[in-house]
Length: 187
Image 1 (cartoon, helix red, strand yellow):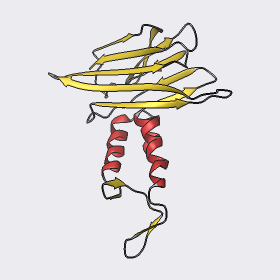
Image 2 (cartoon, helix red, strand yellow):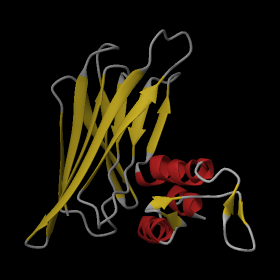
Image 3 (cartoon, rainbow, N blue to C red):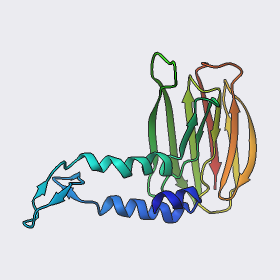
Image 4 (cartoon, rainbow, N blue to C red):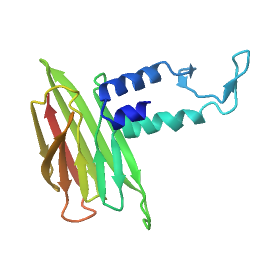
């Protein structure tokens, strides 16, 4: 259910469902668990921790993080859905393409703060692998006041808004330049 909501940009409901799911998940000893089963005495059996990763991490990466990449098209996209309850989220995404000798890492950081009713949201992507970076932050389903982009390595242009997202397309003149792309929104 969560994935479909994120795919169709029903983000507020998707975040609410996902965060509620995490908060009410099976916990033992303060650790989320996904056992293969319980005995009739409610004791765990089977692999207790492995199944947690299956669905939850994928939703975290693709839904809340909004990550997508193509080594073939040399493009990394982040369309975050940072929950309103969170002040930031940070990811290091490993990239290993065909014929690559080493893993490259893309660093992503999204932050959110609110002062006097104005929400300041900033999304940054730092990469030394992708030539193209697309950042499409979620505007939390409210009217967007302003947005801006900056980068010292990438050239950039604003994209047409898509529903509840603004977007910028960043392009580097050469592959393997270490660069940071940043979008700031005031909503």
